[in-house]
Length: 405
Image 1: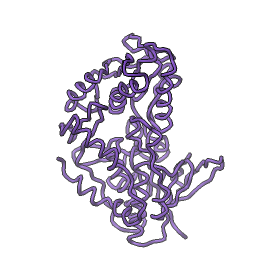
Image 2 (image 1 turned 45 degrees about the vertical axis):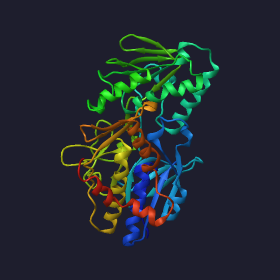
Image 3 (image 1 turned 60 degrees about the vertical axis):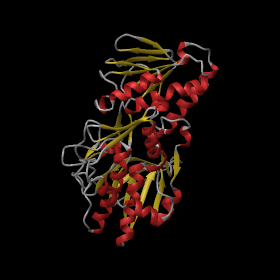
């Protein structure tokens, strides 16, 4: 009977997990099917959803799956039954089915965390998923049909982390393109931490602060959003900001499916795994991407919910799931080198290196690097079997990330 590796999710980690598993099976032989379950056979370029034209940030995967022998199953996994080696799937037509597996790769991603703030769910927008970003974009264009008021012209960004900074830096120019160059645009970032970009550390902060000042973006630090309504935001400090556009960006959590796999989880709901990316409490469940908290090195650093880590986590999880079934040695996940690229809109971008985030370059030069990452580096391989399998090999990436710079 044919055995099966089942991948949940078609994001960066899921796509690369499926390709890496198919590659190793092709290399060593074996009657093993690689199947992937996702709502659509597409890769959403989620790191780019702060940009304009959100609906264009999608890459089809059907041809890539076809040439590599990955079976695509349209649907959403509702339940993981690891004790029975099976999942329950809800399909688009309303039919439900059960599918068994011999090895599972959980790569179901993450979702925006929405705390119990009055009005948040009713009145705030986000750029968490493709539909969210498209809805925000349509809303911004519709503002041109409204009277010229402070509420129309003001935007409040809830959260001054990575995503909040990127969308805030984009907003002034985007809104002037819609409302006219003379519109009195005001963009305000509300962040409960005392500093902008709290998780980015002090390294790039002076550049971020300068860029936001030059772009005219205001910050309200040390006081989070207390309430949202149709006409504005009230901060925890009691300040009232009139606005029809609130964009919530403050934090994400792992897919709820991670809670269905036995094992320890971190505060974000991510599975703690061993160096092969297997959940230790299971015999055959691996995890990758935003659903996993994995050691990147021997210095205590852990993977982040980032495209940078998902690309290699997926390759390693897929390789190791197949290796376990083929009876060959797995490749331990390791990603010692770490860097970040933060887009700062028309001002440019800032690139950093190392966990302490030493500035590598910024401004126009940083923007060139950021565009290369966003426009080329993170995209899937072309639908060519040999090229796709070569790209799915985790060994070259592990060698590249072997030493910090």
